[in-house]
Structures are given as structure tokens and as C-alpha cells.
Length: 361
Image (cartoon, rainbow, N blue to C red; front, side, top):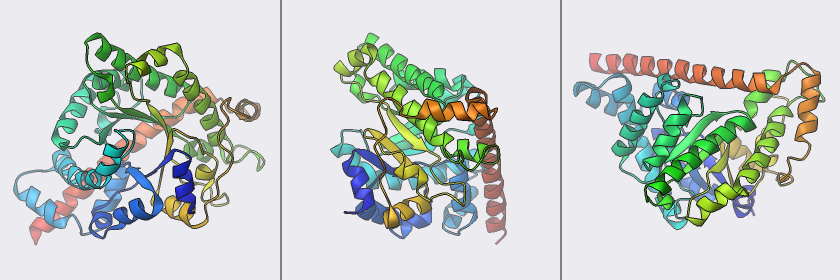
């Protein structure tokens, strides 16, 4: 049995953290679904920037929409939605078979709105209506300003992928926003089974940020320790009386999703954040090279312990090295939001240049 199938059988979903028109046109995504048990997909501005800037697969559409007067964000979202609709259609049988527990694609709101709650909600609403498919998550960052937009979106029935979570506390705040949205739906007599969300914890960036600050014995351990501690918080939420009341009304679990699972350290295993993050009722969204590596030589480690295992012990050792997890977690979230803005600006710049070149010919 393939390692990817083994993970699937353990009730962990494998999602691909990548999309491109080339991948769709050449049947690569369909192959990953059929052969590697891929059941969903995530995207971000960097992924689309690479896809558009480094290929000619978008040229005809860019030229066509440019002649219609589209540019900037409007042009980008038109291109992205075309790709994601095609991917969503491939995943639709999975979505229907699992009653919405799987089979999703994700599209991010403009990163420029990370600290603007009202406009984040309005943009989420607009993109949700524009997409015209049921299996699209709108990605909203779990920043302090993003949380009210997440709650309001859930209340309105907009599926949300809460992104840029780094700490157990970030996860708990995302879970709180989801449950408040559900409770508002319940108070209004709206069905809870129509609301969906996932909470995306970024893992490898912890180790990238600390690899030169600790000795070899501690390298590449902090991200997994944070994930273990967050998994404990996740199970605690699902066993709480508050969640059980919502579940009795057919509320869908806000699944915990492992993001940023590509190995950053060239000396470490290329499947480090797959084999060590095995847990049922979670999702691992991985870059294409990580998916292929795991399909080729994947190993499945121990299932994550319900109680967090040795997470506190590992985190304490990092504290002894002068690394405050709380401070670093907040720093990583801020840097993540900033890096998405930079990628967004690069993406719009690439689009502008390509459209100008194409019109010149």
C-alpha cells in the first residue's frame, strides 16, 4: 500500500499546497487525486505568482481580460478563480461523498486587508458569491483584526480557512471565532451543517526561525512540539461541553490543518513534517515536492499523542536557550502577513508586466 493511502486510511487528509494552469491542463492534479489520495488543495499569492510569471499558460486569458479593461487585483482574481473552479470540480465528488468534510480548494483574500476586519468580510463575501461552487474555502488570516471577519463569515455561511496560525493560542482564538459564528447561526435558527471551516497551523517556519539559534540536538524540533501542543488544544475543544452542544445540532468540526510542511533545513528529512504529524481528523497540506517525496519513500511515525506528549519539555528547552515561544509566535504571524503582502505586490507587478508585453505584440 502506498504511504499516501496509509495516511488516508488513518483519516488524515492529504491536500496539495500548489496549483497552476499547467498542472490542470496536463492532468497532473487529476493524477495526484487518483494515485496519491490527494483530496483537497490550498493556494496563496506566492503560488499564483510562480505559476503565472514562469509560464505561458495564462497568456491568452491575460490578453483577453486586459482588452476588456481588467487589471490589478480584478485581473488576478479572474485568473485564480478560473483555475480553482477547475480544481474544485475535480474534488467535487469527494466533497459530496464526505458531506463537505473534504474535497475543498482555498483562495486567499487580498493580504492588504489582514488588519481590516470589515473589508476582509466584504471581500470574502464577494469572492464566495463570485466562485459559484460549494467547495471553496476563503482564506482569512487569524490576526486580531481577522477574527471578527471570520466569525461574521461563518455566521453568513461562508466557508473559511483560517490561515497564519502559529501557536496553540492562535488556534484557540480561531476556534472561538468559529464557535461564535455557529452560535449566532443557532440563535437565528440557521442550520449549522451549512457552515464549514479549517484552522491552518504553520509548522516549519518555527524551525527556520530558530535553526541558527540552537544546537544540533534541538534543531527542527520546535515546529513539531508546537503542533503537538496545538493538537492537544484541538482535542480539548472537541471534547468540551460547548462544542458538544454545537455538534448535537450537526455542526461540522473545524478541522486542524498542518500548513507550511515543506522542510526548510537541507540537512533534515524531506518528509519531516508529514511522518511526524500523523493524526486522525486533521489535514496536511504539502508542497508538490513534499507530496512526491512522501509518495516515493514515505514513512509514517507514531500518531500524535492526545496529551501533547513531550511538547512542553521541548518548548522548555528552547526557553532555556532564550527563545520565547509566545513572542516568536506573534513575530512569525506578523512576518507571515508581511510576506504575503510582498508576494501580493510581486504578483500584481508580474501581471502588469506580462499584460503590457502581451498587448505590445
